[in-house]
Image (cartoon, rainbow, N blue to C red; front, side, top):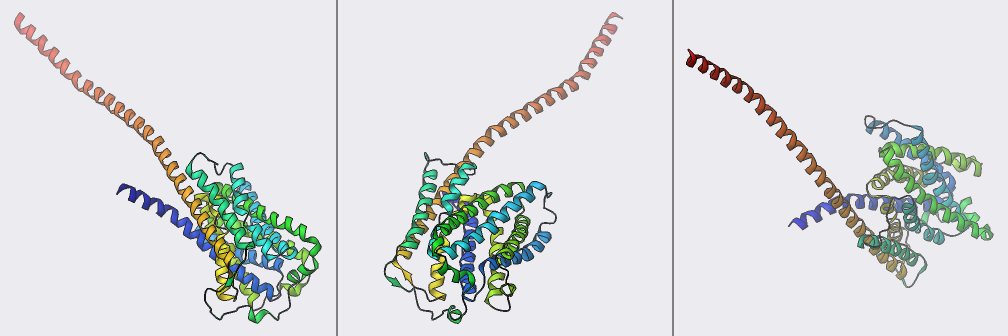
Length: 402
């Protein structure tokens, strides 16, 4: 019975970050579909990144001012610099490098390169001493094998094909109304950039490293500034300024900045409010609770969610390779979660073992203090009795002599 209670408590502490990260990946999957619809409608993707961070700033700043007005610590220059770096690596660089790599290579290659995020994050976390490579324990082996399985499953998902099939027919195709739209400069230029494929590969790798670096910086910032709404607001403001400047440098056509009441506005608002707003708050909380590796290992799960949603909403078909890759991704994710849970349990046991001698020492010192106080009180109460008995003896002597 005690084992069952401990297992339930462990799962309760672990399931909240797991559910949060699954929600984050669902929001990312929906953002990918909205961005695909916006690109088909002719929107420049660099401008979409700028609008995304501007919408995020407009949404999250009032929430941070309202919800954390009494708990927010002092804003120092170090925190501002960390927010600048988070906005640079997590917003401007990672997203703009991603869309530029999409232009110069292909969506398949970019999707495959983004699945290297868990491996890059794992290496960086070990270098920054945020994770420990304890291969001598079952937890360390499970984390390493699970990370490799997640990357391998993502590669199988991306490159291995096979017979195609549909889950079930919903007769919904959201791309149907945008097929005739003029392609955006970002998407149409991919046909003119075949000679820059190698550059696109380096940009995709740079996007992966940038996102992993943001997770490491977010872990550092969460320790110094543990206010998730405020840290997200600072990151969004810094990233929006950087992205607007970059978008103005690469796109001088002001007609591309017009949104209107269409899919462009919906994609920018959703990706800003939900993905770069609330999702980043959840990511910040999970990074502080479980570390950057825990967050990064959920990245390949987005592939599975996008494939299912595309099959249902964009009339795309699944392949045998995508199904097998999805199964391997889920198994690898389970192994990492198991390894993290065992690691948490070991840390809790070590902390409890360290707390018990300290508590015993405090108890012994308090007992000695109580004993000394009792002896002192007893001595003070016995002193008058001694004087009284002395007086009585002297009186007796006087009577006898008389």
